[in-house]
Length: 219
Length: 349
Image 1 (tube, rainbow over the protein chains, first blue to last red):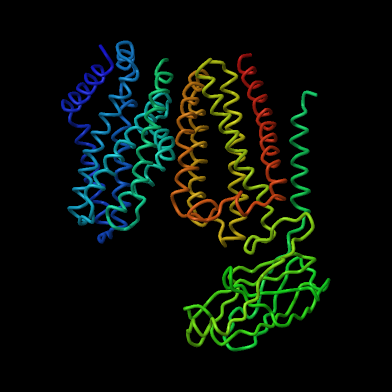
Image 2 (image 1 turned 180 degrees about the vertical axis):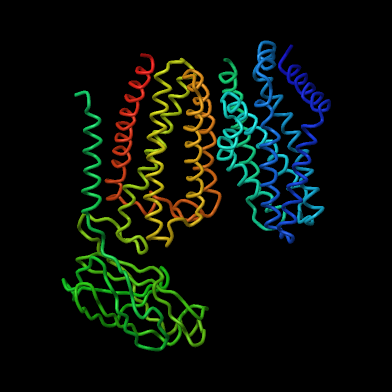
């Protein structure tokens, strides 16, 4: 079975599993909705700048929670089974792609929920969608890989936050900056620079992940 | 000599400390009053010099108010009060050849003993009404020429920096040494994954430890410098924030190490995290600060070290300082490594 077929099967397996036990995905969706609502009733009036920051902070925390389970909550025996059967790159890539899709969904939902209660300040929808896409990819790459690291340790849920937050901050900063452009808080011509930088950071991290993951899984 | 590099490191650092601390600064202007002048008057400006010797060769002292590279106004009369204080009399014409109501001038004093010293944009002249043509007509231009160079081994005088310019030999080289040592630590992590030799993991740990220490020192020296030049220890500067994050990443490295019992597993997982963290550190420290405005040199249009701020005399101290701090760091790292080796051997017994 070649790599792409493996990735495809693993991806299908993830989605089927998620669909069968709906509590995980519905749990994370409820998490987003209740966070948005808590934020809304605490702030009441949310200006564009606060909206921008809140959106990404909610995304950040929801993403950590959503992605954490990808390696941490999977039983050791099942992982052993996968690793005997499949290429480690296929395992990591399928998780990353699946998590990107999940986070994109999560981001869309956060956007809808936040716009519903606090209004929609986005002026350039295309740029914002691009930021959302690059953001969910970047979050997914970082958090998936860090969750693979954290899963090896005993106290993994604390470690997950400690390890991933500092690593993800450059991506988060670029995202806040990029979406501030699309909301009209910032103007300037260097938006292309930031998009390519974000894409480059995503690429570097995915390359590092693919190179390093085979060392991580063998026990 | 087995330990030549340790001796070399200490000698270089002693050289940095002595030469860096004892070399005097060039002559500069710290203060001028009054700062605000008016057209059509004869104004007397009292100038405070720094490291200046105005009384020597006072008849050859010259002073200008420089408007642009072509236009300057010479002082009509120069009265030397003492070595540090000089009173300059300027006849400001009734109209200036600019279409601005308020124009800033650079004060320039030249002396054969001290060389040329400047107060950039330090004097403002207000005109009653703007008339460029008339201003051109009444302007008596004094060409700034034959400026003297101070013939001594000195460091440059910069107005806001003053004596704190010497921190260039601590703050900046500590940073560079940190980066060199963290890179070496990452290389050791790569080597561990390649060869699975437990000593490589200990080396990576020791080097990262020292890198973290140098990073904290770099942060502290930077914060003290910032207090004196920017006014606050922490100015929400992008490089300061990025640095704090970088230190958090390496703090997480040690938390991760502490959470494993099995040494082989600890070595492998922390090597993986070290390489991954290093890959995210490079955009953090080198690319993002260049894109955003920063108070640091080399970002947001500020001039970078190496072009103007770092002159040749400073390079003579600055470059060895990088090597000196790196060697000292490697020495500390070696001690950490040997302790770790002994501890591991003790565990085996």
